[in-house]
Image 1 (cartoon, rainbow, N blue to C red):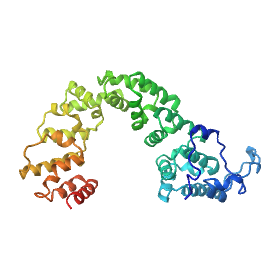
Image 2: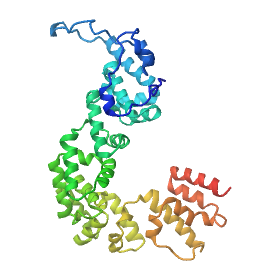
Image 3: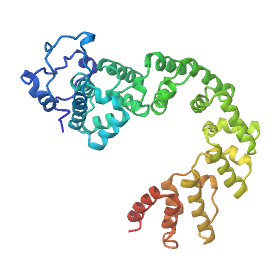
Length: 391
């Protein structure tokens, strides 16, 4: 593996822009010994500047298959030398096949240097590349640096800029100054603070990189269609809903809830409390209604006031926890019956501490039953807790 941080981290992106990128044109270049890409460049020297003049159009030969293969091998070899393993290289190449046509010395190394000068090294560099390989395929080195600088100016740090790029894998290919910047300013005009906007951009970058006119229309519908004022802490959640659903699609969502027992006013009340409920599928809504209303006997008003219940997974959360409550009630091990809402909304660790671990002596098999209901991932978690708390 190449030593990606052997030269240290430059003080700022401004220093990086002034720095001359030393890519040797022969193995005898004086600075090559301290270059972090030394091993690669010695074995794969770039052609000299005067090696050939630009050919005329009629003299450009078709690229031979052997040349393509050599280019592909050079890219793959380079990715491995900076630390990626075979599976990571395969994943990147499959998702971004044009990366194989990149020139290592001209395209890939300068972009890696951009990340290094921003302090991204070693395993962190590998993580950034694997999660966002478009960094290596989109635009030039200067274009990449400009976009990262712009994101940094909005998000406050290089780390946040790269995290946003990881979340929205196409973010660095978008026209940030044309879309992101005016959308950012638009939301600020709605009274959204910089801090909230930064958090929103980190979690949902795709919504702020769309056409500003479309974003404006979506923001208007948050207040008009959902009745959520811009001062509300849920305004941005409402924006996600209106940005995800067209006017007609939103009308159909209202109709869907009304078919299952909600009134128009009920849907609006619920939307103001938990706008994301309008994004659940018909199957998920029907499953929630069947369980909470048809099986447990609650009224529509109960779910309207507690819409969070409709968002939880029936298989991974609702049914496993309900099964535990049933067992405890049948064995008369509970002093009082808790609220179903409380049981379903508390964290996993809190649920285990309150409804599973205290009954380890009376019901040692409760772990296994709950784990079997909750799936493989939770089963592993339960085994770890069991070993630590019951040993």
